[in-house]
Image (tube, one colour):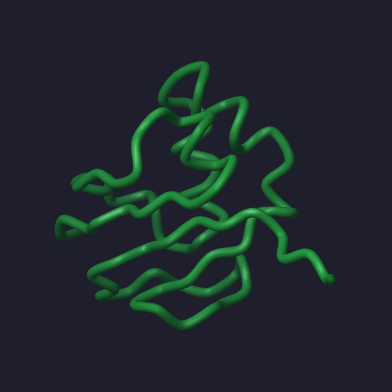
Length: 86
């Protein structure tokens, strides 16, 4: 799979400790769920940020998607906390 840009927002960014990174995804990372599970194994900050992956919202190339969505040829993956009303 090709290199993707990962972008993190709000408390996801704070826990991971960076706003963005470029990463070469392993072949077994096919869907958004695969990505979240794989990232959670990269270290304590990732594990903490992704401890409840179902609440993390994800956008592929700036389009919000479900967790079963294939990553495909996406160039950018953004991870967001849940949106709050107000």
